[in-house]
Each structure stands twice: as structure tokens, then as C-alpha cells.
Amino acid sequence: MALARILRPAKTAMSSGTAKTKQWVLEFETATKRQPESLMGWISAADTLNQVCLTFDTLEDAVAYADKHGLTYSIEQPHQKQIKPKAYADNFRFDRIRG
Image 1 (cartoon, rainbow, N blue to C red):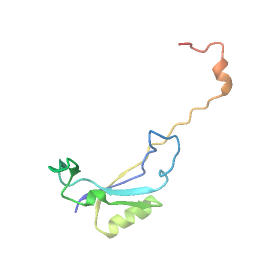
Image 2: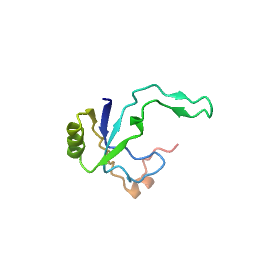
Image 3: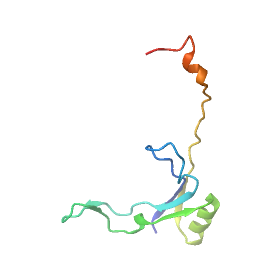
């Protein structure tokens, strides 16, 4: 059976919102090499598991599903974002570096 990854997806670079980042995702690693199709030039693979993407509310649910179905999996913990406190008045500080 293919190797599965359990992760919490990061937010997209095109948006500052955090939609679709609250749930855990179980997805499979690619087992075969991807290659361009000769007729249309699209990228294809022989296995269909790379199209499967399951979502779970908690990490425990995802791990329980993988254990129940005998999947080999790895868990990628999400990075914690660091909030830097900012104040509007800092824009007008005297010692502010001007560029």
C-alpha cells in the first residue's frame, strides 16, 4: 500500500484568510512517475491514489482511519504562526528607519 501523509494545509499565498486550514487532510504520496501524455501534453500518472484527499476534523480521526485501513502514514505537524504585536503609532516614531 502507498504511503499516506496526514497534515494540516497552510493558507494560500494569494489570501490572508485561513479558510480550509482548520481540518486535517490525509493524502497519498505519488507511487508512480508522472509523465506527459503524448496526445494532449497533460501530466498523468498510472496510479489513482494521488487523486484521493480525505478531510478529518481532528488528527485522532485521521490516525484512526489510517490504522483501521492498514495504511502506512507520516504526520506533518503544522507550523505555529508568530504574531508580532504592532501599533499604528509605530509608523510615526522618531527613530523609525526610513528607506
